[in-house]
Amino acid sequence: MRRVVVVKCGGNAAVDLQYVCSDVAALAGTGVPVVLVHGGSADIDALATRLRVPSTRLVAPDGVSTRHTDAAMLEVVQLALAGAVKPRLVVKLAAAGVRAVGLTGLDAGLLRARRKTAHRAVIDGRLTIIRDDHSGRIASVSTDVLTTLLATGIVPVVSPPALAEDNAPVNVDADRAAAAIAAALDAAALVLLTGAPGVLADSADEDSVLTVCEVPETGSPPITGGGMGTKLVAAREALLGGVPNVVVGDGRVPRPVQAALSGAATEIRISQQRVEAAR
Image (cartoon, rainbow, N blue to C red; front, side, top):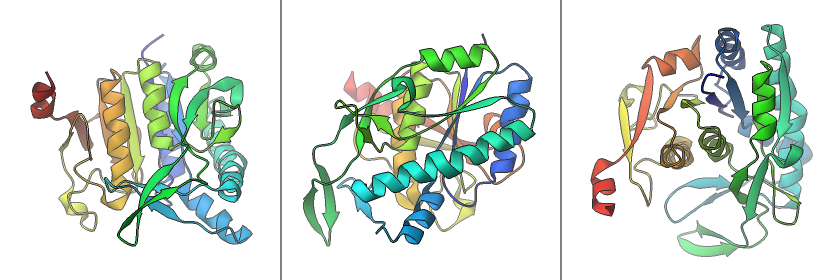
């Protein structure tokens, strides 16, 4: 089996799911094994509004923003991802002639996570400890279900949540889940699609797209605006996990995956200066 390409479809409402699924289908049709990982921030926020569940973000000391997942929001996350976004993607892939199977990290213990007992966040300029956050960090990926599906030409469509140590669900970041899956599968590439042409030096200016973005081996990512902080953390984890090619590309354009792999994206690299210093 050829080496896998892992595609992360951003939850940004601007991302064109039809373009994404058509391109995934085109790649799969040429024999390239593809895993499609998705989030769904826009759908989660919309459903939270409908259900009158408060939706808030937590900003860590390094500037990276994450969703505050209390018990009510965890239920919203599961409903939105498994009940709305995933079926939408599977249907579009089917219409493009590809067999797809929707999975969450709960299925067959696909994603295991360590539950965060406390979350540090900066609120009103003060460091605060949040303890009602049902989120976790990916600890392991069970690849057998993925490789079995890929070997039969099926595209796995994967999303949070994951299973914690107590076998209860916890929310995990979809970008970082994609990175962990890519590393576990020894993927040839990880493509992170978003609602921008790549990593922007100025999140308000699409003309500021970077050809290459270097991230330090440890510490804060160089850019955190526009939701890019977590993507760069995920990209770093994939690179350190052995994935040779990690790019952030535009999910709004035709053939977004192939365009990104052909250079119309920001290539993410580990800063050589920091790597050499670490040695």
